[in-house]
Amino acid sequence: MTRGRFIVFEGIDGCGKSTQARRWAAELDGRFVFEPGDTELGAQLRTWLLDAHFAMGPRVESLLMLADRSHHVTTVIEPTLDQGVDVIADRFFASTLAYQGYGRGVDLAELRAATSLAIGSCRPDLTFLLDVDVSVARQRGASRQDDRFESVPGDFLERVRDGYREMAASDSDHWAVVDGTLSEEDVASRIREVLAERR
Ligand code: TMP
Image 1 (tube, helix red, strand yellow):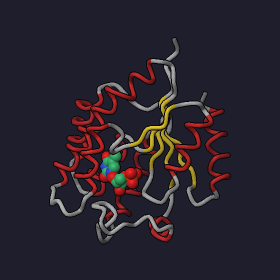
Image 2 (spheres, helix red, strand yellow; image 1 turned 45 degrees about the vertical axis):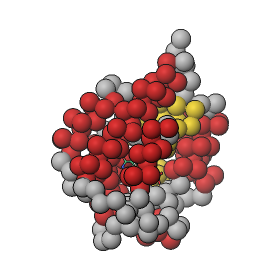
Image 3 (cartoon, rainbow, N blue to C red; image 1 turned 90 degrees about the vertical axis):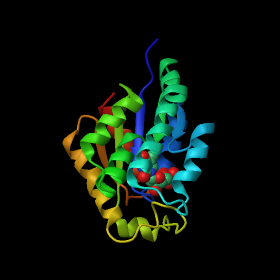
Image 4 (cartoon, rainbow, N blue to C red; image 1 turned 60 degrees about the vertical axis):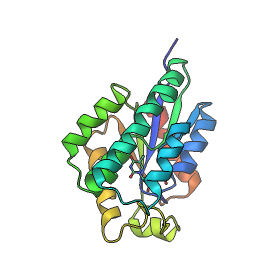
């Protein structure tokens, strides 16, 4: 049986990735998944991770994200791909590199090594970066003060966005950057073109 395709949507909150990921899971008759929190264990980890009232250093944050991801890969993502079904993910390992690495300053080489431990060889076939300015994302109202990641002041989200752009630019075979300020339909058209080009 042909293995399913693993397609990931990434970007800062408010970029429109969740809408597109759900849409493409339906269009491709695939399985929609998300991180963090898509399993019973992950849902518990997500409440710890997002609740800004628990103090936690960036390494702990990284390790909890990776624990969520490792469990998600083993129990959901790999078995689904093995059944020949496409998996369409709202965030995957690039989120940890962008937020905890570029954003919080955790060493990128160490994060990549820890990621390998967590997910082995399970890598996306293609990752879409829906790129928007931080100011646009904020205007879209994605910011939530009780969310650990959305409530960080200063240029945190700028670093996260720059990190995403750097990762996409350095691996264009596996990434496609789409202007997330376009309308939902125009973003979807661009994604359709890329999927057709990279069959
Ligand atoms: P969500 O809003 O897309 O559900 O993601 C929740 C928050 O978690 C979001 O602000 C980004 C953050 N996050 C990380 O910091 N590192 C990660 O590895 C993942 C998956 C999410």
